[in-house]
Length: 171
Ligand SMILES: Cc1cc2nc3c(=O)[nH]c(=O)nc-3n(C[C@H](O)[C@H](O)[C@H](O)COP(=O)(O)O)c2cc1C
Image (cartoon, rainbow, N blue to C red; front, side, top):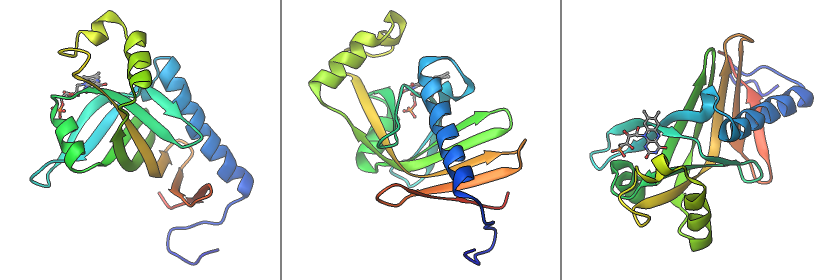
């Protein structure tokens, strides 16, 4: 027991289960329409004010714990993230909340951009002024906070190379 306030001891099994539950939820949200398919992306603008808006979770890569979004280069969020890559992404499903924080980087690789663009439905492509306007953004998650009010559980995870340090915290 660490002795820090709000931290309860727990088993490795419970930690592992919680982490795999989170990964499963994120992965499913990218292939099916679930409550986690859209979330709220927070950025910091030039005046240091927080800005939050809905974005679709397009991809989740569990090995590196990276979530990806598509956005327009002409959008405010693109300019904000170009100046300050710090970002938060919050997902919500009934009594469950997942908060992710980390840094966003644009993936400019032609192969990736072409593959993602080809996979878009026509109505999605129509949201961009052109292919050049389309940006593929990767949020590399540095920390997460998982809150499940039905189970009275809250978990916090922090990247601790190699792997993650995951611990329960008080609600
Ligand atoms: C359901 C829903 C899904 C959205 N998904 C995206 C998205 O995946 N990418 C995006 O850039 N904007 C998306 N938007 C629009 C943003 O919420 C936002 O209004 C727009 O991107 C401009 O934001 P900004 O000027 O702060 O960048 C979505 C809006 C809604 C309501």
